[in-house]
Image (cartoon, rainbow, N blue to C red; front, side):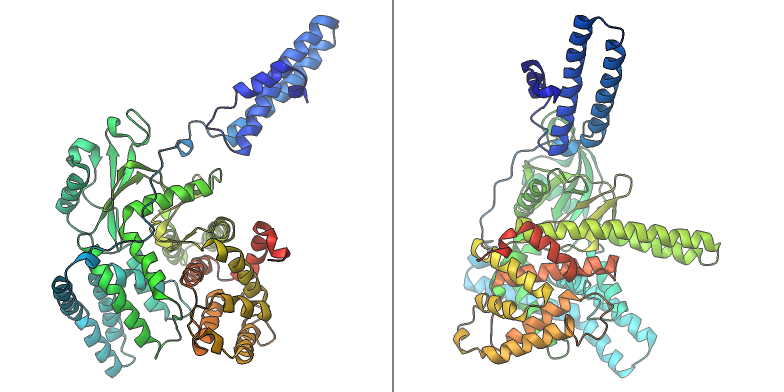
Length: 566
């Protein structure tokens, strides 16, 4: 109220709000400081005019309250000198469609490359196929089982990015495969083979035109992590090359360098992966009834690191002001299709944190019961925090921003226990819906999570791109969808006390579409797929968390048009 009384207070309120403070907490801090300053002027005037013995004690008391409140808000709302508030120049958006070099080759070069790649993959997977045959002969033999798992991991790692990514996604589906297979495939998230440091140095020189020692004060030759597409080195930029300008503060960085040959192999390998999926449909309960062209473009886009840099900046803008969720910062001067330099993020990968808890619990079993119980309680607290934060982030990406991280597994998320925030990495894969599909998809998602069959069928018809759409028997199709809803959301649920398995429910809906000759829009299928991956991560943290039921309030809160006519 004091801040509104006179022009002096209003002028001060303008002065104390720097341009960097754009969030509501910062504005509150500015208003509180303005109020404190105004209180000094106001009560000083009161004391001078009244000259009473009560004026100064009253002024001092109120000034102490106002000043204390201002300092309290300042300290908590605006961390002092937080690098998170530093804004960097924007990375231009790459072209919408990723153009693979393979498409520009002459036919004879493509033919020769295809032949070479086919022979190479047959040689790579030969040990796995041989181990699979032995496992069928010696069923129940734990030694052969262990050897088979070892070959599965080694062959997939050597096969290249497309196969590694496929294995990573399968590792997020514990409902489809035995625990030992899931545990083996989960190693693909962080244990991919690395390339020699000489290759890294040569690529940095080729991309930036400078030697490593000219760019960095420190550069770790040994990568801290290696994934399906590239590996990451920790480094410290020279002062003149800081991400936020010469002499800036953003010097501790992660340098992501693409594996040599990964772009060439990934283009052809996707076709092979789809053939593997088609073959696996005979033995596994899985289906892919959607336009794979759109899906392939999403996967291939991660081969261009400029796309990842653009995605990181867009995610950062979407979550600006939410201190629990962070993304690395990037600068256009250090972004190329094959190299990405981003700010270093402290923390441990979520998958590593859970493994640490498991190992500690195993070592505590023979010790005091109190220590074991305390450890279990600590794990539940950390898992609860992570589950809440990551689910909140995922749902905002889906229903608020229409821009979803497509690779949210435990190896791509760092957790800082000291600062209580997560940092999301590897944003090369991101999905979004076209403008006409966004609102209908949100309503479709609401119908799925609520079990409303009529609305589900209505929106599936909209998302159907099959050329024989007019021939779909809607009565039988609706009956199949109703059966699915009854099994997952209705009276036929086998375990009503357990949470709904959203990924399985999505899968059964797709089986029904395939049965009736329907083909789902590529962007819708990609978004449902990313939701399934996110659910896999959430369920690993908290198996009792009901992703489907918890989604309803988010949809209603962020999309009020759901309550109105479309």
